[in-house]
Image 1 (cartoon, helix red, strand yellow):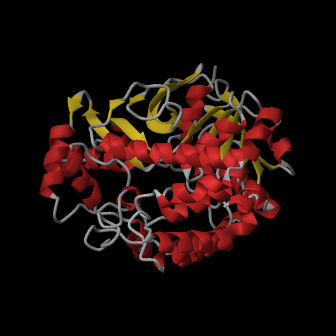
Image 2 (cartoon, helix red, strand yellow):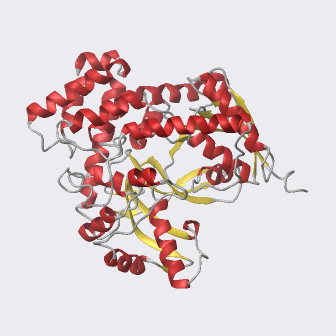
Length: 464
């Protein structure tokens, strides 16, 4: 039997199939992969973008190391879902112009947000826009692909993965995030420096993950059976003042400025709580009061990413996508840092694979609310996704994480049940907002509601 003959067939529906980021990453990873024979259907509200990506997908497929994936643009959500083995969701809730309001209005009240897509004022209103969207997708999966395995890539990940379960309780869904890769890359760098070569990558580093999405921590780190936590602690202590620069390969200076990190927040969290933060500093900082890190991002080695940069970056990616579509730019065969294709291969019957994911808490993290979406390791295999018992976060860190998890669950319940009257108190209880005077917080809430009201369900608006 040839390697191609042994390839595992899989039908993948990509919701948000016109994406300039995740869809292209998936194409490149499928071209590099030799395990899967994928039939990929791309659906997007922007139908021409999905058609463009189907053509770009065909160019990636022509470079495949294994069975070339097949790409097509679906005319409707049901058409994309019918018969799907795996559903991948990567959408933008609203537009970048909506995200700009999420950032700009709080800034007028002294709240600077480094990302604004998970918690804080920006994450809260992004969730109000997105929960109904993910619930609609969840119901469509229930009706057209009830047994499909569903990966959510959209932020705010905790709330939106929960929205899928709220809409379709029997769904087999998980949230996928690459942020934990950052600490694994640091540990690989430490090991390579000790070895004097580049023998290790982040894929050789195993970590025990605890927390919620973008507010994750690790309490065990191993490489080839060796406990790497002592080496990491020494590394963090040595760089506690200067930081350690970490950037994406090939990133230009402006991208590095807005998305790079010096890991000073993660190192400081290690000092404060005894275990290191695993996500990037731009995300970690947003889960804590403004005075901790966000009030002085320069001191902590990160930037507040402006939405105008995201808009310019999107335009550049659109231009590059068009060049790739017409053949002026050739796709590159390379494996990304993402784990999605490895997860899919394991779920379709390949070798089991361990990865950090977001799932409802069924006891995998002690001390966090039951049923809340939490992030820990899980084993992907032909029978599904099995969470690994991660243990418990140290106090008082567990209390901080639990506070956010409870708020996220309450926000989801309020939106799903139309209880708009509960939203302001939840908004007001976020650590970024608590320091404001009540009148300021109320004024900011009302302005943000007015700025995005066209995307908020009527039942919520009437009671907010």
